[in-house]
Length: 160
Image 1 (cartoon, rainbow, N blue to C red):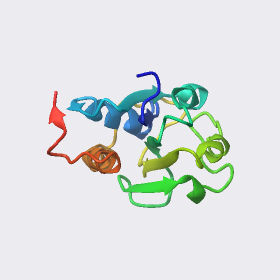
Image 2: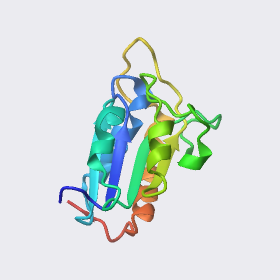
Image 3: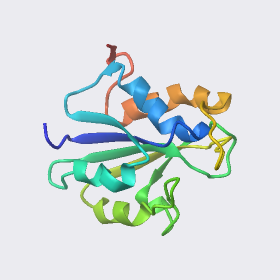
Image 4: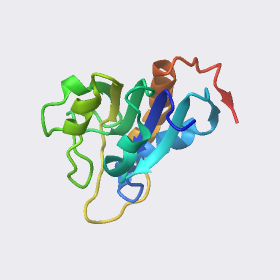
């Protein structure tokens, strides 16, 4: 399947503490048997560069982005954002790529949901491998939310 119905993308860098949240959630999702129409991938830091090449506005129906997001909540809190919730220039990856504008361009043909987790620690420029306890504990909640969004009940997704 060249263009899946649903693309689930984990964004982040595992070398920068809680920024590794997206890849950690993807790792857990990849342990499950999901419908063939769902593509789950760890986009790392490259999401702004290539994620849009995985989408076809006529075939792809849903894009789910999993990332850390600063929204003033307690560390480990999960929330969802629609593209309309993002003020212009407000959603950037760790290297200052503005993702809001490209998401605005596709939102009318592809249902876009951003699952954000409030980080506790994102060191820069120092490396810090590993998630904080609060963000680590948020992974199952994010997995359940993705399963809900793609219409798969947790009991239906079978461990591989």
